[in-house]
Image (cartoon, rainbow, N blue to C red; front, top):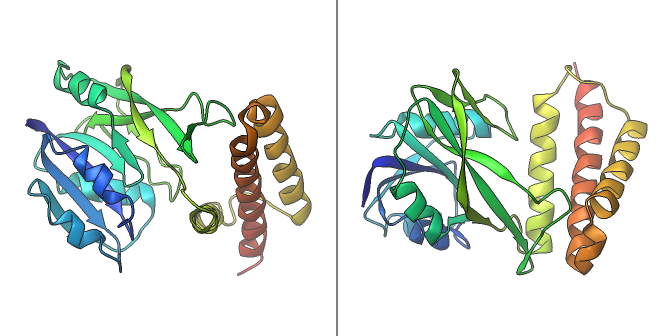
Length: 249
């Protein structure tokens, strides 16, 4: 068991994926699962794992929620994870061998999959995220979405082994994630950033061109096209929602 690190996971209605996530962190002595209103079997599944402690909290944005989860940890070292991710065996071994240094935060390569295919393009590769940090020297930003770890004069140290990530498994998940993230973007940037229907269209078109052509999505067949379309649609709706939100008093 890894006693010095607490794995912190955010969850909501993740019954279809959470077993793989929790199975991949069984070597950690403590896992804090912060659930924000699941109405499926997420919590019941999590409670089957003896190293998991479930805490309920209303949704307040991804960044703030990650900090709430970290505040419940018994350890100062935090490994942040999502319920559509799992640790590779190689990463677990690499973390176990680390001489942990509180002046460092550790970035991890994330391998993103769609339809069983590792997407090496479309802006999904390379994808490196800071996930292992000491909570006395670093914390998550307060962003509603696309949160990131912020530190106090810390060094970012890359790890060699990956996290496996499956952002969506079906069209329904594709649409649900697009709806949720675009709404959070609009709320986060309300009256702070300008938008318009024309800006929504232009940004959306450019997003598709960048993903499909510049970032080589066209080399990835149907999966590359769908991922590029997902990115483009998300951009369109986040700018349209921001335009609508800015019009409200």
